[in-house]
Image (cartoon, rainbow, N blue to C red; front, side):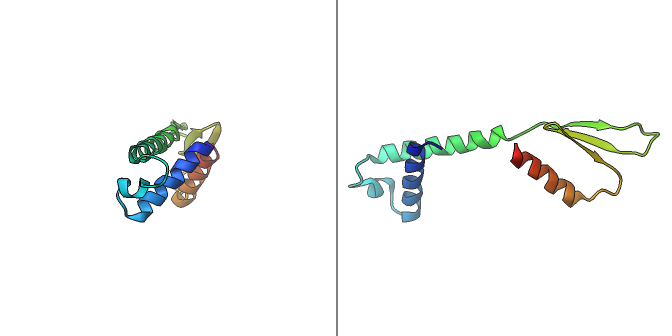
Length: 102
């Protein structure tokens, strides 16, 4: 986030926390209410766009069924083999940690 975005993020957050209308809050602040509304829209859009950028695809590969049944997930250059009886919570935490590290 740039310094300008941070400044407007703080202003928008203060406005939302104040419970005042946009016009009331902007009065005497040195900027127009419409500018505050535009920044709220711009920052929301940027946040939504950032969330969609974090979506990643994983390739799932099933191993030979005649061997011990397992699945492998390739996620961002990391291969995770999943065998029967795996710990679902551990897998969920591992995938979340890998996605955060990206």
